[in-house]
Length: 402
Image (cartoon, rainbow, N blue to C red; front, side, top):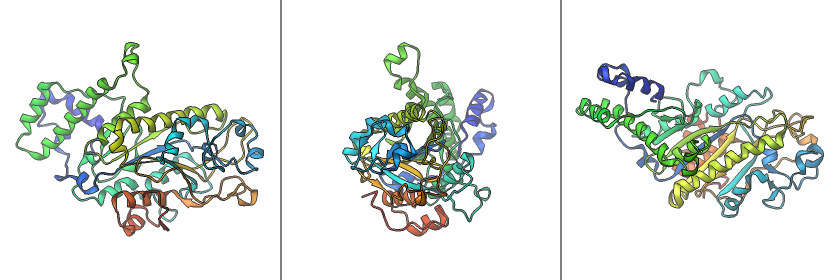
């Protein structure tokens, strides 16, 4: 994986001695094309950091126990999904996708993480993709990187980690490119020509130079993506939208897998307002991806938005909710069978709750990701259960990917 900060430092020394700089002599690339192996389908994984409250996103309004548990939060009107579940109105812009079969949800799902409810541990387990029998400190790579390790002829641009935060989910030996909207690299035409000439006869170093030039092109793309009205006021697009724009740009090319994260889901107090803001960012991100990818590529795309755990069934005294267990996954894209809330609903009776406080997990979030990758790319079930998600039992295909 190329570290973009090292790249920036390396380019700063280019005028002194490009050939002597250690960064440009330590990067290796596979020679063939992983995109061809994966085919035309695309996968976007969004980590919702902070524990999204699935019960407030996909509300079981048909359950009479919801209102007593949430006397404040349940007062806001929901958009009907299937007669039993209702959609948080902050995602109203996604309702047409539901009606078009391009949006679905998985309810009462969780990683194997239980009891301690720590954001850091929960996110580590979510991105590592391991079970309770394998200590997280013994895992050096993320589950998306492990699936990439099984792709013959992988090139770095096949997968992208996008955004400012470290994406453990893509960490590992398989080559992955990174981009963040708050850093900058710019190569003049003269510098690009120098790189090409210096490394013309060396394919190894030429590949590193090619990535430097590709990242330089990102900055030009950023300028081109500026909304004229916002540019006139000297402001750039919302960071989440810029990440979505860049991910879409790469996915329209050779990239087949992209991963990034959205924060702001820890709603201990004032959940109505705070969750609404986070859902607004998620809505804009999904709609932006759909728009920028275009109908053809969107029709081959699956978006999985997952969180480390859910939140308590009962609201607390400050109009929020505390760390829980089972939550919900948001699934979007033209490649899915949408218009459905997937998963086995456990109910809200106290005896049906996990530790009498949280929504009971009835499925493993890893199984939904495994079935999605099997449906999109045809990966072997044994590979997914033994290598990508150690200890996972996938169970029957839920039909999320037709």
